[in-house]
Amino acid sequence: MTAHPSQPNLFDADRPPAVPEAASARARMREMIERLKVAPAPPWKDDAGVILDDGAFRRAMRLVPTEEAQASWAEFDAEMERLYAIWIRSRAGPQP
Image (cartoon, rainbow, N blue to C red; front, side):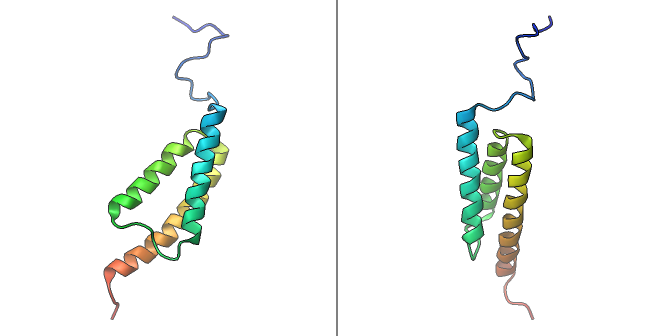
């Protein structure tokens, strides 16, 4: 059975996100990026914290337009990499 032209496929990947969902996701992503930008040290207590932040950001990305999600991801990922490098160095202990 083919969908009627006026009835888009329920699973259409190009479906624009609902405005309230996109606005909420956008605010959440911006808040996460800003929190990481001002952090002088990693905010995570363990590996699970890194995974949770990454996962939450990726879920929020699905609710905004692709181009916006990609730009936000680039910012978020750069801050995650910066803080992760600090975290790894601190866990490795003093270097000889």
